[in-house]
Length: 312
Image (cartoon, rainbow, N blue to C red; front, side, top):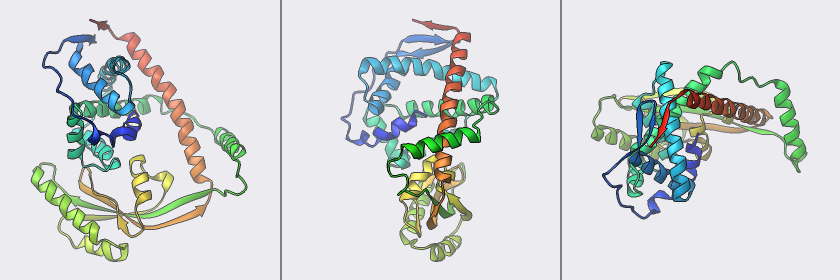
């Protein structure tokens, strides 16, 4: 996903000098299967690309136009295949990015506006990416086959390339985790959500061990505590891996928005185990990613060839 590039630079947004809003006038630049891509759309996306990838204006504009064309085709194909992405899924992805750059969703939106980018520009990109991920998985789930031989060969090559292979035993990290959710009903007001987040932060400050903190959390009103159990770091969702890794044992991760409310994860135990499972999983994920990227490019090329695209 392109959000990996976004995360690398988003922390710089708050220091960005405010830019004037785009002019109200907007013209149609491309028609993709009867849907217009306007100069305003391209300008906004180009500004986001410039912020996150530090490209010059011309390159960012060209990339923005082609990216938006692809997104129209991706979302159109998603609808055809019965795939939809909910607002809560987009909100969750937006909140995840905010959390990883140590901002609230509201502050991230404000930082984007300060830099002259409508937050909907990022939300639209996330929606297309989420839909496309589902499409690619649906179409190619039987085609992406990574054999044990592929993994073993890549693992052996990795070990051969390591200068300190004999002095660096393979180690995996295992966590024991608990999920703490401050429930927020779907139709709650913004004020209620803010209140629940304050309550979550209060618990987080006083939470110093799972033995003391988990029972305390269970006594709170409308708070759900669920045992996640033991998880290897390779089994954690990408957006949580770094956060959990940086959280001390006996403490809670920062609160983030989730479908059910405000979520935190308690890190109850952490231990290192001698195993090459982390390396094997990373290699398998990398091989799958590379093969998936090739299939994804082939898919979008097929959609482009079949679509009517008119440049104005």
